[in-house]
Length: 210
Image 1 (cartoon, rainbow, N blue to C red):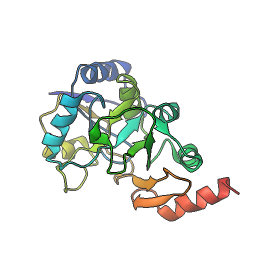
Image 2 (cartoon, one colour):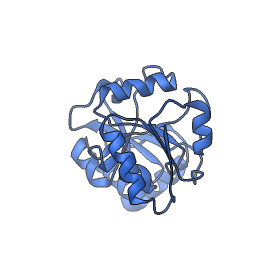
Image 3 (cartoon, helix red, strand yellow):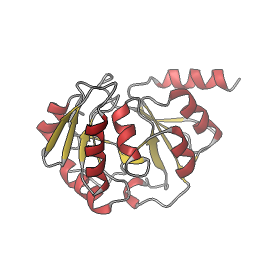
Image 4 (cartoon, rainbow, N blue to C red):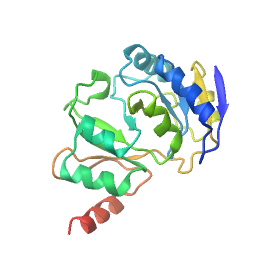
């Protein structure tokens, strides 16, 4: 296991290239985000995705996806006008949006209605990593399922050690999981409240849609 320490604002190009190349050949990384520390791999590498399920002892629940930038969302997902507005308001940031995919995704990312959960995080590390693997990285928290999500690399390693690379950028600034909403249709529904209050989401949406 390789541990790379990076600046949370300006992660080193050399360190990110090393980590990105590990992911590109099927590796698994523990990495920081704006919310909590995540564990991720190439979304389209089934062997690596299954390994994440095993490491987290996770039941067959769909995995969220982090994106390198907003543009990717419109390439891979059917963004309703409300989803588009929410993305433009809150991304990069702590809001995960459920929408229908535009391209074929492995079953590990689809809920019972065939929706995916996507987010552009407000942290350079996952955005850079995603660029090495097609603009998308598995974005689940680096903990054993049902336990508290970690806000530092040390906490993440107390749960999961069998990974290929760990990127340590100090504590996550929010320390709380993202808020999840369903915006697959022309309405917004709360799935899970997290780092952004749902009341703020509703209020901001009203302002831009007046």
